[in-house]
Image 1 (cartoon, rainbow over the protein chains, first blue to last red):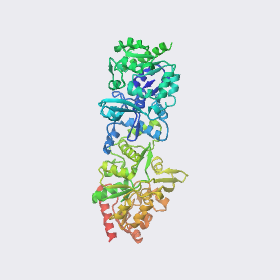
Image 2: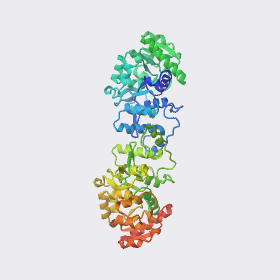
Image 3: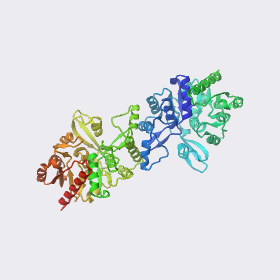
Image 4: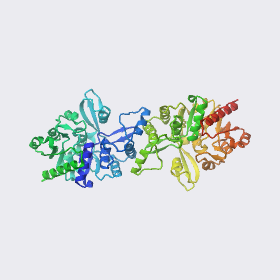
Length: 309
Length: 309
């Protein structure tokens, strides 16, 4: 499973309701990762860990439940950047990660320790242990870290280009290529195709493994009823020349896909996607409910089996 | 003013009630400083900052008021050392300090930023910006960081020797020597003579400046009524061959002192200390009340003036 943040987490929760969690490997975006107050923060890995560990903030859908931000409030006293609020419980994860990384442990090792500490059975692999940073080049000529664009500037600047700095030189984290080659099915979560799945595919050996694997590659459309459920994919898809539609995202993934699952509201895309040689089905994909997410996962796996035949 | 933790903080609070705070420079022990979870923690600098900033925990007398330990509790999940609990508000100070030190800023610069952020007018100087660590060699052959001895092992192991690792090579922080040479009076707070004042005096150029200064050096006895008010000086004084008494601590400081202030309960020490050539007076020194602390500070300054004549 290739996944980004909340979309990936919700889909994984469904997948683990459909198949044994310890058979699932999630390859997770690290392009959003950032260092603030000296702490290494991995928003997508953390969101997935907290969701699967059952400790996610239920309304926010990211960060920890029963959370406060005492430390962040105190940090304001020192006049440091205050645009990225860290919850107190969440901060413990970043502190632990940062001190482990400082000892020379790779992110993949630390990620495995953290997911186990939260009782997560799904194996979580960062796409790479190497530096890979999603940069947003704005129309007004600025070069922002993804989080500066998304959190600090609320995705308001018009985007000229999305750049995955470091991706070309990045090696997949240990286990990533093996997981893709050995998989029964590779699922692309309904995460943001540009900035959640994009950075993972930007690692050359990951893209190569996705093309080399004999496992069917099945994607789920993040566009529902012609709209993006959450996030800013609608603002970013046009920057990579993709249409904001269920069919448009399938076209963006192109020949990588063997199968494509769209929402029932986008059932009219089934014919056009199928015409491109990608097996396509429609089912409910709005994963507010774990049962819907589990049914969606089962649909993906059935489609994988069908394609694999 | 040369000071350690709580004793130094309480004395400084009195001193700033007696003289303008911006005329006071405190040279503070750094031998207790430690790195935990990757965070640089300076217990004595922080205690003094919190006291003078009016945000100290009123019962504990160290750490922050209105404090919780959410982050520390969460850190237990990762199986890391749990013996040193960090409060959430306190942690913000450590985070800020650590990230500033990581940019290459010296501790003295960061300390100045932090005390200003808390509205502290007293200039706080770490004794040194260089590595200096108080190590406790135990009778059972172990070599512990001071905090491991004091906090983790509750000062239970019998102490063979106290070592100030790094002190011989440490340079005073910028401003320390100048403050001592230019002072009207140098006061030694009623802090632990061995592990609070000791590490400061172990920096060769600090000891030299204390001997070179024309300012009278006045100390306050941390022993009251033959007992140590708080801390573990009673267990450490014997390791340096000093007697646990008001006169014993004066003898430990020896020729460094021009004047010595003992508690009224130890008034019998006045004669014996005076006989060694150190001007000695007795007054109330138990600083539970800021008025007592201010009166004690005034007594010290009067004694300095008298000695200086």
